[in-house]
Length: 160
Image (cartoon, rainbow, N blue to C red; front, top):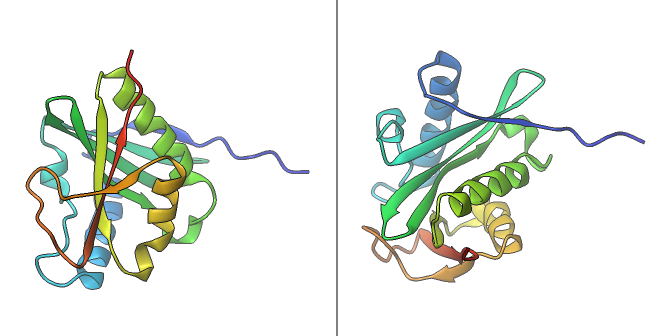
């Protein structure tokens, strides 16, 4: 019987070429999948903003995932840039990372975490993951507006 893999989840300053290439693949894939104006992925510079915290997931020294949390103010944060290496989907990486990020959000005093993701089939596994974690569908938040290619989800975090 095999033991589950323990992924290393660490803060990343986004300065290395490996994470830059990983994120470029992420942004390129999302832009190919989404019509113009409907892709809301943050590029490398936007992820370096002071209100964004970014984590990388490694397994045996290999980069296998990433995710970010953007402070929207007033106790509200946005989950951004969740990505698992295409060769490692459905291996527990996203669940481990989401657990970590939600723990960080709670520890930092956020009351709510929201997200935007795609509405079509490619994003169904992501929506299922978020639903398993308790996220519920909601109206657009922050600077988003209604878009048939987007869905919005939110999760109220436990208080104190």
